[in-house]
Image (cartoon, rainbow, N blue to C red; front, side, top):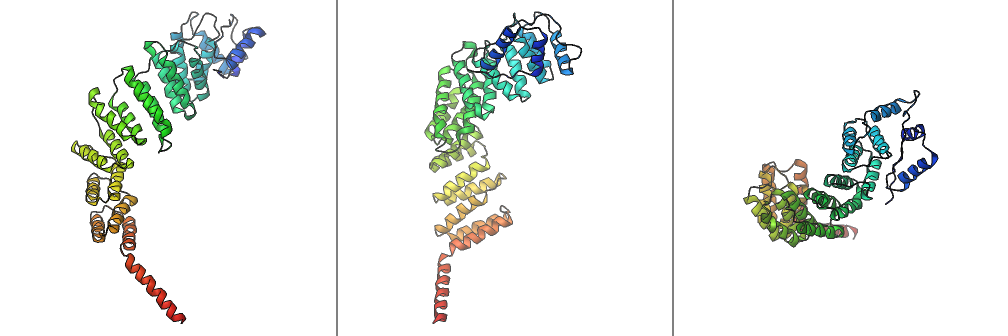
Length: 396
């Protein structure tokens, strides 16, 4: 994999001051711009900078002079983390690559990558990830996970995160994916799911990660299982989500409010409102309070299936927990009552909500106007016919 690692001007100045021949310098430039391999050119023993050097160059000279002649990668990693200037720290990391008796390890790459990420030097961080994938050092688990975390945070590096994951699977046992790895990858997939049919594109990735998690023997926690359940529910694969839900006790994990919320919402969106209502009842029995979004999806789904008594109970339960439905949810419920010939019940419910101060004045006015329009179609039609008749008489 080609790695592009920009060379700062002050590092080029260092190379010129070190009396390097043109051939080693050309080799260095080629390897840094068109390869992921790290050169080992000797820097000689001449002073780094002249008296006319800039402050940045003198800082670099001072920084390098503090390193012992036989410094190790752990020494370099410690120094990089302690340096407040990220550009200077990354310059020294590159400079160390040129030492003939030095080779970077996971600790130095981890320090450089963490510095590049925290200082928002994303181009340098991406180059470091490419070098790690190309085998520039012998990585360890923390370094791999840092690479995945960075790639997951950058949308255009989504596929690169799975490249790191695949390399981890082929690594020694101490570098195999762990609980944190799967959590980061599933979170990244969830960030791209969206609604069907777009979500089906990533359903295969969700199933693959869930299967490989089982095969790895890693014991998941509630957070990770909730991610899997949420992913299945967003893809409307409710049976798969229920299977994970039923397996939670096997891992000594207890469902929480998020678990039930994903299942209630996913079931209703799938059209399995009865299952959603059962999950809601179980959730409330355990003392969990759904989010406002879960409440509103359930109310609307019940109203669309003409289960108005249950829908009204859910609305009042929602209000008792200091959550309010939005205008669309209220309209779905009340206009549904009107269409079923229960206009009186719709007006009574609206008045009850007004007395409870559960609706704002503007929402109340919009709902009242809508109910009058829907619940009196015959009068409106009769009035229109009468107006047309009177108009025709006047023309005669």
